[in-house]
Length: 289
Image 1 (tube, rainbow, N blue to C red):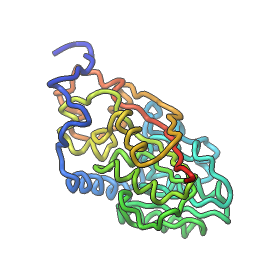
Image 2 (image 1 turned 135 degrees about the horizontal axis):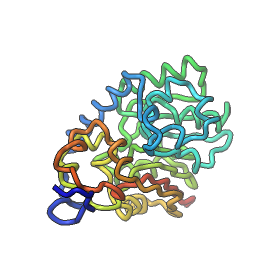
Image 3 (image 1 turned 45 degrees about the horizontal axis):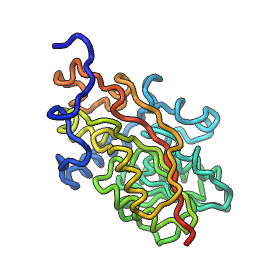
Image 4 (image 1 turned 120 degrees about the vertical axis):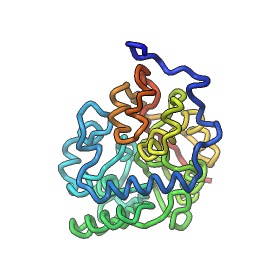
C-alpha cells in the first residue's frame, strides 16, 4: 500500500460522468429521499460540522444572515453555497427554490423580496416540506410557501418566477437536463437562474461510483462542468456565467461525503481525493424573446 496519497488516474479505476449510470433513476430518488428524510427528522446538518469542510453555514453565509434566520431551518441546511448571493433579488420578485429542504434559502429570499414578493420552495421529501411549513408558520413568513414535487416537473405554471435558485440539489437529480428544461419553463422571460452546486472536475474512483450513498451526499451524481453548462445551454438559457468555483481538498471531500460507506473504504486508502469536485455558483438568463 502506498504511503503517500496518489492522484486518481483516469481509465480502469474510474469512469466519466457520461458512462452508463450504475443505478436507475428510481434507485437514486429512493436513496436521496431516505437520506433527506433522515436529515429532516434530526437537529444536525453539515452546517453543524467542522469548520474545514466547505459545507458549513459560517463559510457559506454572512453571520448576520444566519442569526436572522429560524434555527429550525439552519439546523437542516445541507447546501454547498449561497445562491442568494448571486441572485440579485429585489422587493416584489417571485422566487422559486429547487430542492428547498428546511427552507434556509427561502427564508433568506423572503427577507430580500419583502412583503410584496413571494417565495415558493419545491421539495420531493414530505418530511422536509412538513418541517419547512411548520417553521414558516411559527416564524410568520407569510410570503413563503412550500410545495411537494419533483424539480424535474415542478407543480408551477409557466412564466411564474423572476428568479430560480437552487443550493446543492440539481446534482442529486438523475435527469439534470429535464431540471433545467423545467426551470426555463417556469421562469418569466428575462428571468434569472442562480444556482450553487457540486461539479465534477475529474473522474471519480470506481469505489465511490459504485456506492449509491454518495449520490445523496452530492458527490456520486456530480457531472463535469462542460456537461453542466451544456445542459443549461440546451434548455435555452443565455449569458451563462460561472460566478465562483471553490475546489475541495482531500479532507474536505471526505467530510462532505461523510456517512457514505465507500468514503471510509480501504480501497480508497492512499488515493488523493483532492481536486475531484468543486462547489460552483452559476447564473444564467432566460431570453426575453
